[in-house]
Length: 395
Image (cartoon, rainbow, N blue to C red; front, side, top):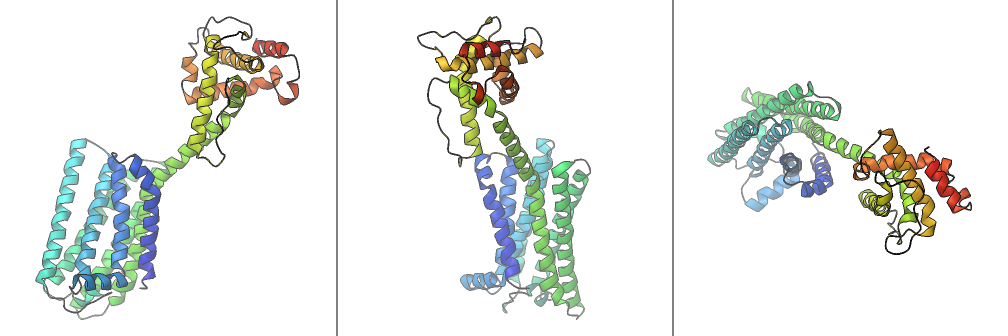
């Protein structure tokens, strides 16, 4: 198997991990985020250290022929434990039960790693084997046990993971179900990897040569299976992130009419955000501008404020003359929403404190703008008439 088939999965897994680094930094206390942050780079490490050029370099640096073999086995075993722990965390359940299961899994696979290294140093592996260590030393005392122990431990972890995911997939829907199915599919390929390795090793025990199954077929299955599983773990989180981003973008767009009107109410110059700024920054700026404008209109939004357009007064808190029409339009839209909610529909804060409330107000402003005549072509009309039209539009 060409070395590129080891390095490409390692690179793809590292890219996947890099994309999750911001979330990992922001939510490090979340055990699920931490678990995913461990599993993905471990997969990349496995493929990187299993590549023949890396195997040769590690052996040369350590001065121990075939030291890469137990090292790769240990990383794969650690990855198996991390994946099971991730699934236990992901599935949830009672905290104490999940903690005990995680400790048992970590302890068992930690012991397997210790035994793997002990068996390697008890055995004798003088000839460096970059691709076929499993089959070449499959009949060597201690090394034979090390190889079988590694494969069995990997098969058990893969089977447990696949069963847990399949049972859970039957209870959920949507992207979570799709992710679990991908993990199961990757687990099936992982079992195919283990079966191929065991077949090749067993063939050596009976004086047959099935080394190609171990050196070509099994690694190919492992590569595809690992990618499917990483995709399965990432899909629910990525899908949720995309949905949240779409919701935020739609909310930002729907706040546009209210924001355009409030720009005339705010008695200072609106801060300009460049179009290449992040959506979160632009959304925050837009909601801040809207709430700043509504703060000046709060006296007119409270129940019992009375009719009539906002007064043009002097002194602190006075509205600009050109703000009368847009202010009256916002007040009329707010009264319309409160009227639909029934008499005594609550104070201003009950509507404008949430982003969803601001969206409703923006939609009301957008719907009323043509009725009140507040448009680019109607700004040359008498301001008093426009303000009166805006105030009366809902009656």
